[in-house]
Image 1: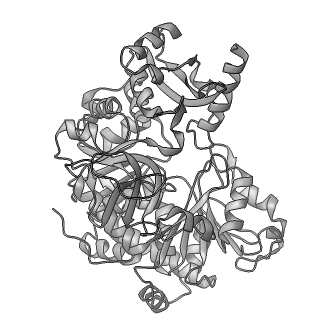
Image 2 (image 1 turned 180 degrees about the horizontal axis):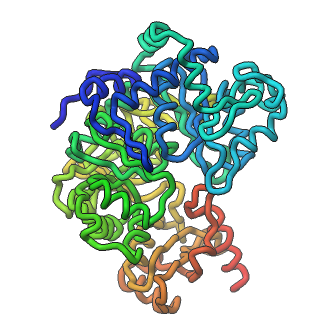
Image 3 (image 1 turned 90 degrees about the horizontal axis):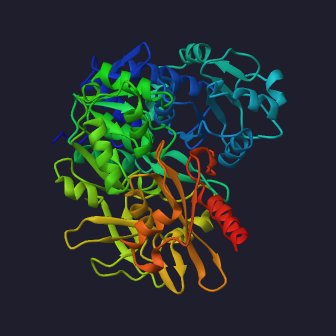
Length: 544
């Protein structure tokens, strides 16, 4: 096992790794190859630039970009001076961007011009026309009164906007001593990130995370994968999500590994990077693996270097990823943004059976229990209840004290809203979302169980199950099915398949077979289950 880092703040961690592995490659992106020392040096220049703008400890700085070196440089610079990196999704609409900047009270925004046709600098210009006549650091916009400057990663300077190169040059006017003084004042208990979770029916929640907990938990995640200095992460999960910034990043970095950045997922590019860079670590889900497997150039030889990584899903999903990526030590996991990405992780050396059918033991520093959803009382091992987590958990949601209070129980455990159990072997086994539970005729049905059975049918690519209103049973089970390409099956066939494996009350009363592009989705591309519930309820109503 690797030695645990001595550093307890992210700025210090970068310095520690740069001292230990100065010339070792740390970041690969397109034609750029940065060593740990080069990453540190660029970060220090950017941090001095932030100080020149008057950014103080606790100030929020928005960070909006896909996976590229500038994201990592800016984030660690923000951390070094004790400010808070407010990660913003590149899926954000102009309305969502404005809401996050206003809610976080961001004093500066570090942003690319656009991603996938979404213009971000342009959106801020429209929102804040005062940009044109203001100087960097002195913007006073009516729409965003806290915002003072915009740093354009790939744009030119003008008004309150300063281009990347100009900003870096401006940092040279601040002494290294001032940066050292600012960095030495940062505490392990200080907030390093605000990560906004995507909301389906309401505004997103700003999850706050601490320096010390992020490093400790990230290192422990890396230990479960048995990471080392020779490991190379294929980094396609977005840095603005916790799976990227609070999980993959500290796990690999704290072990001195290499980050092979993939800016926007594409199966062909993924295969080129995996093969060309000899990637050993996979972070991703079954949909990514499926796209890779279905690409014309996929072959076991192209992914032969893969060894481990993290994913979550049904047993057949995990097994499919292992087979596709040739990653025999892939780990199943459980967690959320509020638990620093993961709170339970299988060990890479666990048996395949354990890695398919459990999410592993709690990580060091984490305590997980199942509680009665009504009374909040702890349940015996082996009983399914709401999962509650203590230890390395968020100190709360930004500017939402009531929401924070409602999310923790009287003992200080974070209430996840997920169902699961802790077995006699101490392992966590996930059983689905509590609020997605279907109550039909007074009996509870877990959608994840029905989805798993449907997914076993050879014609089914993906299955999504929800409850829809019913006058007699309160709710009935309804399913929407995406078929494998070229597959043909009737709803009667699928019902018969379910009847052979499920109790009668769990068998879908309504099945909708639809094309992949006919599913309602969130801005991040996930299936929008509330929207699907409404659509299926309408279908059921029209069929009566």
